[in-house]
Image (cartoon, rainbow, N blue to C red; front, side, top):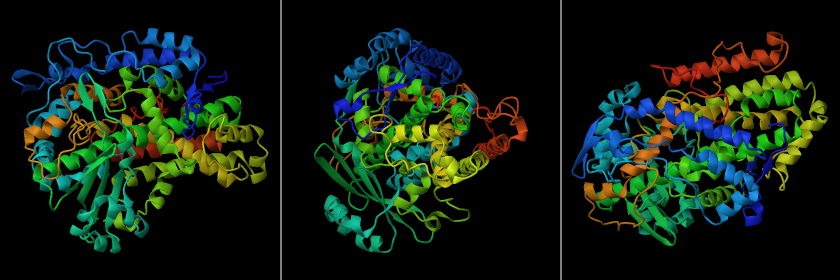
Length: 600
């Protein structure tokens, strides 16, 4: 990517908040991305072949594979290369016109060749339809099946599992989303929750510092989509939770579900059983969609790509910053571009069914947001989370997502500290680095990177802060490629629904039985697209692994081998990631599965 990298003129269509979205001016890298994605479709075939458990749904008996994909699914990227070429011939304006018109291209992810239509599931246990026998996923997960299925039939089980499902398993989605309800926020929440606030005694819970919220109301202004004749709906939700002072467990008390001017409040104390189960599924749906597009893509793809674009355009090869950043700056920019061009081929099955709608969400989220707001420590502080409130035995063990991300952050910070200390002897050396100054000025400039909140490069400390934040995003993204991140919790899509299949909000006293509830949750076609999305991450090898196959002391980015203290710091960084993976996947650590770059 030695040539200058351009970006989409998003401000021309009123998207002024989102960081720049790079647009490569050559065919080779986007087309290479398509070819690599096509190869991944082949690499995941063994996992799909393992979808061999038989189910009976809608009076049909077939394997999970047949329900999700038909008898022989086409390569979902067939024809994608030609589509890429057509769009790139027209340049950025062609893609922008497509997005403005709300157009999408190509077919859906799971192309069906049989006559089995998309069906709603009939029993909660059938959400195991997405568990493959490959790598023993189904066999290892089976003991949990009745527990997770009970979250669709038992209000006690559903409430008990709600927070741990997010706190323990939301790592790939960067789900640092909980916030302490402070006094200043109570007036607005009282108005939104009405009598439910008083009935649940929330004033007293808030005054005791035990009331928390998960605010996903950002989605309420976005219309549902219709894909393959089925509605895809992301509700806006606000969930209020009470923390037990002794055990530190969090229990949902009420959920406000909203969409485009209408809302229903569901209380754990007064809603019907079926309505409360629906409310918790609606909340989990909005959390999933937040995790996909905002927790994961905005934090780790969008801001990172703008910083990488301006780095490539301003820092020459051979510069120490280039040597530091370039090894981890490949693949992301062309992947983001291909995602926008081939949206319906690649994007997971949410209600954000075209690239313009996605970019509008990014822009809304970015309003008033600054670069460091994405750092886990800043997020924790701004949301009022205290380590003591989420620690039982070890730091943050009651919120493992936070615990794990902070560990990755510290490893990155230590590596960056070693780099800056060895590269810049003084603060004046930082201030006098012309390439660094050009890069950060371009990244912050509204007409270039449009990344807000970047500080002046006047000291080593400030440079460390910026580099740590940038490199952390790339490294932390790698967690999404480990098998444990998706299987079996996320692939059991009632735990993390990518959409609801109806935009109707049931009344709080609705008589929803299990079959009626399941009709609102993902159907087989949606689940098939979701499985394709997850399997692409976890069942295909990275283009370049973070841990080199030749050993931690090979493929070093700086000259002079192990005599260079920066290369010694690289080795330490790699060893710390190995320790992390061993702890995260103790029974089967996938040391070669963690990617060096953001690839997908």
